[in-house]
Length: 228
Image (cartoon, rainbow, N blue to C red):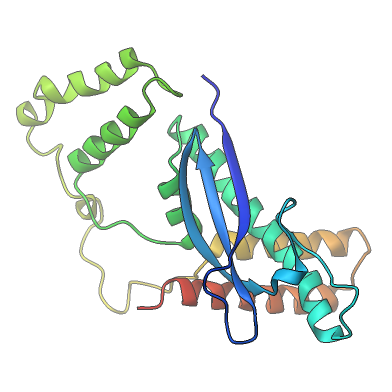
Protein backbone atom coordinates (compact mmCIF):
# COMPACT_ATOMS: atom_id res chain seq x y z
CA UNK A 1 0.00 0.00 0.00
CA UNK A 2 1.15 3.52 -0.73
CA UNK A 3 2.05 5.64 2.29
CA UNK A 4 0.44 9.08 2.67
CA UNK A 5 2.57 11.88 4.08
CA UNK A 6 1.97 15.56 4.76
CA UNK A 7 3.63 18.45 6.60
CA UNK A 8 1.39 21.31 7.74
CA UNK A 9 2.13 24.62 9.45
CA UNK A 10 -0.48 26.28 11.65
CA UNK A 11 -0.72 28.87 14.44
CA UNK A 12 -1.09 28.20 18.16
CA UNK A 13 -3.50 31.07 18.73
CA UNK A 14 -4.49 30.18 22.29
CA UNK A 15 -1.17 31.37 23.73
CA UNK A 16 -0.35 34.78 22.20
CA UNK A 17 2.74 36.69 23.31
CA UNK A 18 2.68 40.26 24.65
CA UNK A 19 3.41 41.64 21.17
CA UNK A 20 0.47 39.71 19.73
CA UNK A 21 2.63 37.11 18.01
CA UNK A 22 1.80 33.41 18.22
CA UNK A 23 3.95 30.33 17.70
CA UNK A 24 3.98 28.54 14.33
CA UNK A 25 3.38 24.83 14.92
CA UNK A 26 4.43 21.92 12.70
CA UNK A 27 2.16 18.93 12.15
CA UNK A 28 3.48 15.76 10.51
CA UNK A 29 0.91 13.26 9.27
CA UNK A 30 1.75 9.75 8.03
CA UNK A 31 -1.10 7.41 7.11
CA UNK A 32 -3.49 9.27 9.41
CA UNK A 33 -1.15 9.29 12.44
CA UNK A 34 -0.11 12.76 13.57
CA UNK A 35 2.44 14.50 15.76
CA UNK A 36 2.76 18.22 16.49
CA UNK A 37 5.66 20.33 17.74
CA UNK A 38 6.76 23.94 17.87
CA UNK A 39 8.84 25.38 15.03
CA UNK A 40 10.24 27.93 17.52
CA UNK A 41 9.10 30.59 15.07
CA UNK A 42 6.40 33.18 15.72
CA UNK A 43 4.29 35.57 13.69
CA UNK A 44 1.37 37.96 14.08
CA UNK A 45 -1.92 36.35 12.95
CA UNK A 46 -2.49 39.27 10.56
CA UNK A 47 0.57 38.10 8.63
CA UNK A 48 -0.59 34.49 8.26
CA UNK A 49 -2.54 32.76 5.50
CA UNK A 50 -4.31 29.88 7.26
CA UNK A 51 -5.35 28.10 4.06
CA UNK A 52 -1.88 28.18 2.53
CA UNK A 53 -0.04 27.73 5.82
CA UNK A 54 2.29 30.55 4.82
CA UNK A 55 3.38 33.96 6.04
CA UNK A 56 2.03 36.96 4.13
CA UNK A 57 3.01 40.61 4.28
CA UNK A 58 0.40 42.92 5.77
CA UNK A 59 0.20 45.64 3.13
CA UNK A 60 -1.39 48.02 5.63
CA UNK A 61 1.61 47.75 7.96
CA UNK A 62 4.33 50.41 7.76
CA UNK A 63 6.78 48.34 9.80
CA UNK A 64 9.41 47.56 7.15
CA UNK A 65 11.52 45.52 9.56
CA UNK A 66 8.59 43.26 10.41
CA UNK A 67 7.66 42.88 6.75
CA UNK A 68 11.22 41.83 5.97
CA UNK A 69 11.12 39.26 8.76
CA UNK A 70 7.83 37.90 7.45
CA UNK A 71 9.35 37.50 3.99
CA UNK A 72 12.24 35.43 5.37
CA UNK A 73 9.87 33.23 7.39
CA UNK A 74 8.55 31.44 4.33
CA UNK A 75 12.07 30.51 3.29
CA UNK A 76 12.69 29.03 6.74
CA UNK A 77 9.38 27.14 6.60
CA UNK A 78 10.36 25.72 3.22
CA UNK A 79 13.67 24.54 4.70
CA UNK A 80 11.83 22.86 7.58
CA UNK A 81 9.43 21.14 5.19
CA UNK A 82 12.31 20.01 2.97
CA UNK A 83 14.24 18.54 5.91
CA UNK A 84 11.17 16.70 7.24
CA UNK A 85 10.45 15.29 3.77
CA UNK A 86 14.05 14.13 3.51
CA UNK A 87 13.80 12.22 6.81
CA UNK A 88 10.51 10.64 5.70
CA UNK A 89 11.98 9.54 2.38
CA UNK A 90 15.07 8.09 4.05
CA UNK A 91 13.00 6.07 6.52
CA UNK A 92 10.75 4.74 3.78
CA UNK A 93 13.77 3.71 1.71
CA UNK A 94 15.65 2.11 4.62
CA UNK A 95 12.87 0.70 6.84
CA UNK A 96 9.96 0.49 4.43
CA UNK A 97 7.78 2.61 6.74
CA UNK A 98 7.91 5.87 8.70
CA UNK A 99 6.28 7.04 11.93
CA UNK A 100 5.51 10.71 12.67
CA UNK A 101 7.32 10.52 16.04
CA UNK A 102 10.49 9.16 14.45
CA UNK A 103 10.44 11.83 11.76
CA UNK A 104 9.99 14.56 14.37
CA UNK A 105 12.83 13.20 16.52
CA UNK A 106 15.13 12.92 13.51
CA UNK A 107 14.35 16.52 12.51
CA UNK A 108 14.94 17.83 16.05
CA UNK A 109 18.18 15.86 16.32
CA UNK A 110 17.02 13.88 19.34
CA UNK A 111 19.18 10.83 19.97
CA UNK A 112 17.81 7.52 21.17
CA UNK A 113 19.21 5.92 24.29
CA UNK A 114 21.71 3.12 23.93
CA UNK A 115 19.97 -0.17 23.18
CA UNK A 116 20.90 -3.78 22.59
CA UNK A 117 20.41 -5.33 19.18
CA UNK A 118 17.43 -7.34 20.42
CA UNK A 119 15.80 -4.18 21.77
CA UNK A 120 16.18 -2.58 18.34
CA UNK A 121 14.62 -5.69 16.82
CA UNK A 122 11.73 -5.61 19.30
CA UNK A 123 11.14 -1.90 18.76
CA UNK A 124 11.13 -2.43 15.00
CA UNK A 125 8.48 -5.15 15.34
CA UNK A 126 6.29 -2.98 17.56
CA UNK A 127 6.50 -0.08 15.14
CA UNK A 128 5.95 -2.34 12.15
CA UNK A 129 2.86 -3.81 13.83
CA UNK A 130 1.30 -0.34 13.81
CA UNK A 131 1.61 -0.27 10.03
CA UNK A 132 -0.05 -3.66 9.40
CA UNK A 133 -3.07 -3.04 7.20
CA UNK A 134 -1.76 0.39 6.18
CA UNK A 135 1.62 0.12 4.46
CA UNK A 136 2.66 -3.33 5.69
CA UNK A 137 1.19 -6.82 5.47
CA UNK A 138 0.34 -9.27 8.27
CA UNK A 139 2.43 -11.94 6.55
CA UNK A 140 5.57 -9.82 6.65
CA UNK A 141 5.02 -8.88 10.28
CA UNK A 142 4.52 -12.55 11.22
CA UNK A 143 7.92 -13.37 9.76
CA UNK A 144 9.52 -10.70 11.91
CA UNK A 145 7.92 -12.15 15.04
CA UNK A 146 8.77 -15.74 14.11
CA UNK A 147 12.52 -15.07 14.24
CA UNK A 148 12.23 -13.90 17.83
CA UNK A 149 9.79 -16.63 18.90
CA UNK A 150 12.05 -19.37 17.57
CA UNK A 151 14.59 -18.31 20.16
CA UNK A 152 17.32 -17.31 17.74
CA UNK A 153 18.93 -14.96 20.24
CA UNK A 154 18.63 -17.51 23.06
CA UNK A 155 20.32 -20.17 20.94
CA UNK A 156 23.04 -17.79 19.78
CA UNK A 157 24.47 -16.05 22.86
CA UNK A 158 26.42 -12.95 21.98
CA UNK A 159 24.19 -11.81 19.16
CA UNK A 160 22.20 -9.75 21.66
CA UNK A 161 25.07 -7.41 22.47
CA UNK A 162 24.94 -3.74 23.25
CA UNK A 163 25.51 -1.45 20.32
CA UNK A 164 28.33 0.14 22.28
CA UNK A 165 30.26 -3.14 22.16
CA UNK A 166 30.72 -2.63 18.45
CA UNK A 167 33.37 -0.04 19.30
CA UNK A 168 36.72 -1.05 20.77
CA UNK A 169 36.29 0.81 24.03
CA UNK A 170 34.10 3.37 25.72
CA UNK A 171 34.80 6.89 24.42
CA UNK A 172 36.37 9.37 26.78
CA UNK A 173 35.47 13.03 27.30
CA UNK A 174 38.20 13.88 24.78
CA UNK A 175 37.14 11.38 22.12
CA UNK A 176 33.39 11.96 22.11
CA UNK A 177 33.75 14.69 19.52
CA UNK A 178 31.40 17.61 18.89
CA UNK A 179 27.74 17.43 17.95
CA UNK A 180 26.49 19.80 15.29
CA UNK A 181 22.81 20.37 15.95
CA UNK A 182 20.52 20.21 12.90
CA UNK A 183 23.47 19.02 10.83
CA UNK A 184 21.33 17.89 7.90
CA UNK A 185 19.55 21.23 7.64
CA UNK A 186 22.86 23.13 7.83
CA UNK A 187 24.37 20.87 5.17
CA UNK A 188 21.41 21.61 2.90
CA UNK A 189 21.86 25.34 3.50
CA UNK A 190 25.53 25.14 2.49
CA UNK A 191 24.58 23.18 -0.64
CA UNK A 192 21.97 25.77 -1.58
CA UNK A 193 24.39 28.67 -1.14
CA UNK A 194 27.08 26.92 -3.17
CA UNK A 195 24.56 26.25 -5.95
CA UNK A 196 23.82 29.98 -5.99
CA UNK A 197 27.53 30.59 -6.58
CA UNK A 198 27.74 28.03 -9.41
CA UNK A 199 24.66 29.60 -11.00
CA UNK A 200 26.25 33.06 -10.85
CA UNK A 201 23.51 34.42 -8.58
CA UNK A 202 25.89 35.21 -5.70
CA UNK A 203 29.55 35.87 -5.14
CA UNK A 204 31.48 33.39 -3.01
CA UNK A 205 31.57 35.87 -0.12
CA UNK A 206 27.84 36.55 -0.31
CA UNK A 207 27.06 32.84 -0.31
CA UNK A 208 29.40 32.04 2.59
CA UNK A 209 28.09 34.94 4.66
CA UNK A 210 24.52 33.79 4.00
CA UNK A 211 25.45 30.21 4.92
CA UNK A 212 26.89 31.41 8.23
CA UNK A 213 23.82 33.52 9.03
CA UNK A 214 21.33 30.79 8.12
CA UNK A 215 23.45 28.10 9.78
CA UNK A 216 23.59 30.05 13.02
CA UNK A 217 19.81 30.40 12.92
CA UNK A 218 19.50 26.60 12.66
CA UNK A 219 21.87 26.16 15.61
CA UNK A 220 19.81 28.59 17.67
CA UNK A 221 16.63 26.70 16.76
CA UNK A 222 18.27 23.41 17.74
CA UNK A 223 19.44 24.89 21.07
CA UNK A 224 15.90 26.05 21.91
CA UNK A 225 14.36 22.71 20.97
CA UNK A 226 16.82 20.79 23.14
CA UNK A 227 17.12 23.18 26.06
CA UNK A 228 17.05 21.32 29.37
